[in-house]
Image 1 (cartoon, protein in one colour):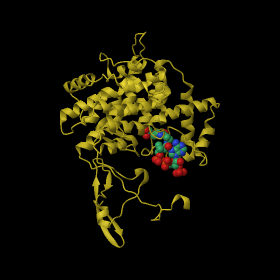
Image 2: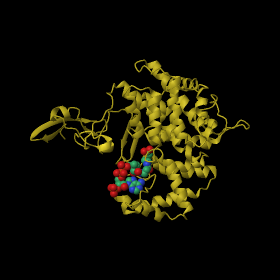
Image 3: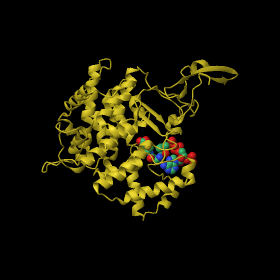
Image 4: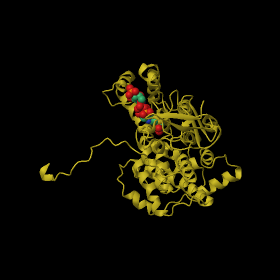
Amino acid sequence: MSDKAIIEVNGERIELPIEIGTEGEKAIDIKKLRVLTGGLITLDPGFKNTGSCKSKITFLDGEKGILRYRGYALEDLAENSTFLEVAYLIIFGELPTKIEFDKFIKTIKSYTMINEEMKDIIDGFPKSAHPMGILSSLTSALTAFNPQSVNIEDEEEMYQAICKTLAKIPVLAAWAHKKNLGEPLNYANNQVGYIENILEMMFKIPTEPYKPNPIVVNALDQLLILHEDHEQNCSTSTVRLVGSSHAGMFASISAGVSALWGPLHGGANQAVIEMLEDIAKDGGDVEKYINKAKDKNDSFRLMGFGHRVYKNFDPRARIIKKSADEVLADLGIEDPILEIAKKLEKVALQDEYFVKRKLYPNVDFYSGIIYRALGIPTEMFTVMFAIGRLPGWIAQWREMRLNNEPIGRPRQLYVGEKLRKFVPINKR
Ligand code: CMC
């Protein structure tokens, strides 16, 4: 295979270099396209064929269903590691030594307090506000209390900013939940682990002691590992794009939270459960919903199905499906919704429409069922996803800045009106 691509424009042949990634992936480098072609650009809505950067963080092969963080298989990490250890790996590139990991945990704990004035901001939200809206706003509000943008060239300053972000966002996430419940906001408890602390802040009430069930802690830990990074997805691309203007980390992550909220992205986990509940209420007729999803005159889509990149299976969905069975059995929960999900999956996987379009269950299809079993309310599902994705956003933001990437600024093909003359209102 040549390491050059040749395109012909108006009879003139233009050579463009082909770059090859570590795993043999190939990309045509079009950086000089406009200059060499006298202004031609590429058109690729949704960036289906466009690589926005080179990255060393996550490798994904959508055909083979492979997902690796920094070269480690997702399955290996989910089985043997913990959320924070994987976060360290994703952000800094290597698994931490014991000394490095202890320092990481200690530094994160040193930042778990939140400025009390943030509570005034929370007071301003109606109780009915969606926790993703609250989380995005509060993350943005953190910029008010941390106005200095981190100096990316100062390794220690960057390290402290990363630990600060990992410490504070889960507190805000738990506060978003408490706001919905109308319960007092909990401070972090530095005596317990990262995952235990998230659960404690979300579920502890002042009148009762709280000790999380270890089954719940382990299941949540694993679920969050599966969400930690997923290369250039919508929210991560948003974080990189916002950060490319040299906006700070909190501002960039706040934008990432908003992007994640959409039902085609992280918001699908909430949408899946709502869909399964609707099917259950409607008598459990999965065929009816499969037909709705296939009907091009119906806007209904099978939530939790399909993926931009995975065209065979989503490796995260495989782990989650197995884990959903185990967690429900361990907790002694029988959830009829799980049966509906399995039935729906079975019918869809045999249906020509889904087979032809290579639509498979994605990470969000079964994750909501586990969250439900863990006692997490539906509106908090996407917030949990945000906590899980946080290390990925941080790692990608850091990589983008350290690589000194230029400001993100796509071009467009203008198809609007040609020049016309202004007409005064009384003549229109
Ligand atoms: N139900 C029914 N039809 C579907 C679905 C679905 N869930 N997903 C895709 N299709 C059809 C789509 O209508 C199109 O058909 P046709 O070729 O006849 O026009 C074809 O499959 C290709 O779909 P697409 O929309 O061009 O694919 P995409 O890569 O742009 O979108 C997706 C990917 C994930 C947004 C989409 O599959 C979808 O909307 N899925 C449901 C929402 C969901 O579960 N999102 C979570 C994604 S995984 C987690 C995450 O990203 O955070």
